[in-house]
Amino acid sequence: MGDLEPTLVIGNKRYSSWSLRPWLAMRMANARFNEIKVTLRQTGKTAETIRLHNPSGTVPALKLGDTVIAESLAICEWVNDAYPQARLWPENPIARAIARAYASEMHAGFTGLRRDMPMDVCGSYPGQGHTPEALDDVARVLAIWNTCRKKFGGAGPYLFGHFTITDAMFAPVVSRLQTYDVTVDDTSAEYIDAVWSLPAIKDWVAEAATEAPLPHPL
Image (cartoon, rainbow, N blue to C red; front, side, top):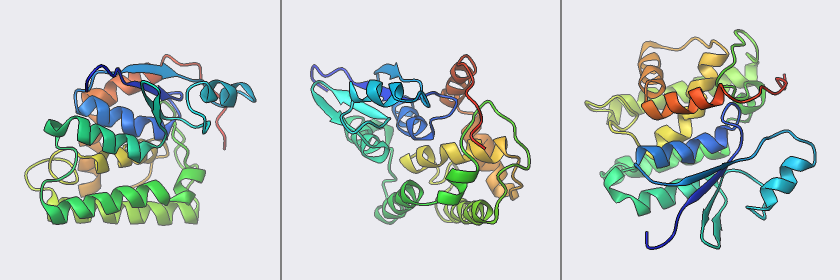
């Protein structure tokens, strides 16, 4: 780590799904880091404020001295390298490849779910956002979770037994399925309970509850 003091720039904890992912990975790695929060959805001001920290104008961003890592999955990869004792990828090569593939799929896909069920960790909107596109994405998510739990879960409660970056990538989906009251199978329900019971998640939600709510986008 040297003399670098990591600073994670994030959006509102209530709404910023991308910010939750690396923040959770850092907490699960017991990383020490500073935190800067930028209020989202402020016309003009939000983008201007973010660019003070990240030229690309997006959150999250990890600041390491004069270096900025500006992408959730890349930040998680840095955490894995900086804190190898956290084992944020599976040790088995096949499991690790599958974990990376599903993390990348979450990163790049599921646009219907993102659009129609935006994250609001303090909200409750049962039945809203249940569009065919969103529910198709949900079905794919649940299939991934069931496959991982069956093939790689072992004795642990997470997708690959112990907590990995793949769990961090899916954590906002765990939130969404509860916010919008989506029916899930028993295996997925157990996984949701495991993620939502994490002390780090409880801290995130508690802090989100102190933020001023913004208008729901739907």
